[in-house]
Structures are given as structure tokens and as C-alpha cells.
Amino acid sequence: MKRLIVWLRHGALVIEWLLGVLWYLMTFWIPRKKAHPVADVYNAIHHPNGVYLFGRVMALRVMSAPKPEDGKWVNFKRMASNWFTLDFPNARVEVRMGERLITVRSNKEGYFELHDSCSEEIDEVEVSLPQHGYSAVVPLVGSQDCSPMVVISDVDDTLMETGSISMGKMLETTLFGNSLTRELVPGVSGIINELHEGGRHPVFYVTSSPWNLANFLKRVFQRAQLPTGGLFMTNWGLTPEQWLTPSHDVHKREAIDEVAGWYREARFVLLGDDSQRDPEIYAKALRDYGVERVCSILIRSVSGELRANEVRGHFEQINREFGDVAHVVDGADRMREILVEQKLIQESDE
Image (cartoon, rainbow, N blue to C red):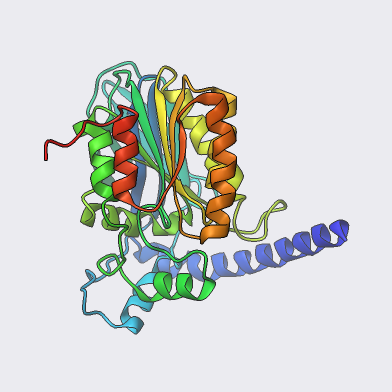
């Protein structure tokens, strides 16, 4: 059975490749001549071990700004436009970092990535496409300074209401809403701002949503007044290892490990919910890194009492081993109480 699934996936890959060649031939000449490529930078992070850039070279898209009164059809068209992008593979991307000029190439889907061990204290980089006359100055998030604490937060049903435990509700929320109508989890943005301490503690957001929705997500974060931080999303698509989306467990753990490598002396606050496997992923990170690195795990209960009790039982064992680290919460008020008890944020004067 497993071999049959592998053969089916490889067959689908061949079909996808043939369709991709056809699409490329159809769009290469006319649209690309008229398109204005840009380097859309999703991450520009300065951390103690260097600089990390990640983005995509694609045609400039001009979309109308969302309004709260927009109907479902308007929202659907706007959301669908995020999936139909004209990418520029093998594009030359130049990054001016201080006095240095670094060149990278975009991959077959237009994505480009740069890890650089920059030791200069710089605030911005210049990203340009010399073959297309495009250039932009991109501010960096973070600094070279070491941070005593880093916050890593899930997004769906932790920061904003997605309804991921109900497929129907999740599809309706995702396809027919916009960045102004998405419901935010009450109080959580305030908690993250307190943890952030005006930039002293970096914040990273992790979601299994695709990179196509990165700018949409950033608009939601801006509306929620969440601090600007690093973003870990996924590249949806057919590969020999996956049908559409990569493993949630693998993606989230890779994000934690990446950030832990950047901030090797920092302690981590991990925020999530119980709709997927955040409790298990975070507990495994605690066991691997120890309480010296993972100082708090807070899981929002969204899946009902059965799941909440399962996670509480797991966390009771964790806390017997590591101390008062892991908790299930029903809202931001309880989350804040625990963080005050753990001395990770200050008690309110009120």
C-alpha cells in the first residue's frame, strides 16, 4: 500500500511538471515582458550570529485595500489572487549589507534565501534586482545583541481565531474573510507585547499556512498591534515526500531549532494551542533543550475538555520533572497570571 501511494505521488509529480511546462510556455513571452518584478522580502532578521533574509521574486501585484464591509465574493477574489503569482526563477538578487554586496539566485519557484555571518550593527539592507531595475531598502528586525529571552508563538487559534478544529469553519474564515474581519484572540497581543518589552526580547511567529499568505498575515498582525518579528510559514506543493503541505510537527520543530541556533544563550517562551500537536512538539523541545532553554510553555485550550485533560495529564508529568513550566490556559488572563508567577512579565499596578 505504501509503495502504491509513493507511485501515485510520483505520477502526480509528472503531471504537475508537464502542466508547469505548459503554463511556463504560455506565460513566458507576453506576461513576463509586461510584468514588473519585485523582491518581496518576508524575513529580514538580524540576530547575534548574523543576518537572515528570505523572500520571493515575483511580478508586482496591485490589489485594492480591504474594507470591513467587503462581501464574501470580493474577499474570495482577493484571497484567490494570492495563489496566482507570476514568479521569476533564477533571478539575480543583490543584497547590499553595510559595505558588502552579496548575490544570490532565486529558485525555481522564485524564492531566495541568505544566511550571512554579518558582525556589523546595521539597521537595514538594500535588496535589488539589477536585471529588472528594482531596488528597495529593507529594515532589519532585531539586532546583534544577545537576548535573554525569545518568544515563539503559533498563529492559528493562538493569536487569531481560525476554527482549525472545524474544516467548514476554517475554510469559510480563510476564503471569505479579509485582514480586517479576522477575529483575534482577545488579550493575547497584549501579552506578547509585554513579553517583547519594546524589542528587548525577539518574537517569532510559526504557522503551517503557505508563504502566499505572508503579506495578508502581516496586515493582520499590524492591525492587532503585534510586534514585528520573524515569520516561519510553509511552501505548499507536491513533492516526493508530501501531497500538499509539509508535516506540521517537522515544520514547527525546525523553526524552534533554527531560532535556538541564532540565540544560543536565550531562554524560550513557547505559545500554542491544542488543536494540533503544539503540546507534544513543545514538550519534546523542553526535553531536548532542558529547562535552562525552555522556560515556559503555554497552550490555549480550543478543542474541548477531552483534549485539554489529555494535555494537562501530559504536562503534570512534565512539571514533575522540570518544575512549573507547562500549562493549559483558557484565555489571556490566565496566561498572564502564569507568566507573572514565572517572573517573565511584571505584575500589573492596577
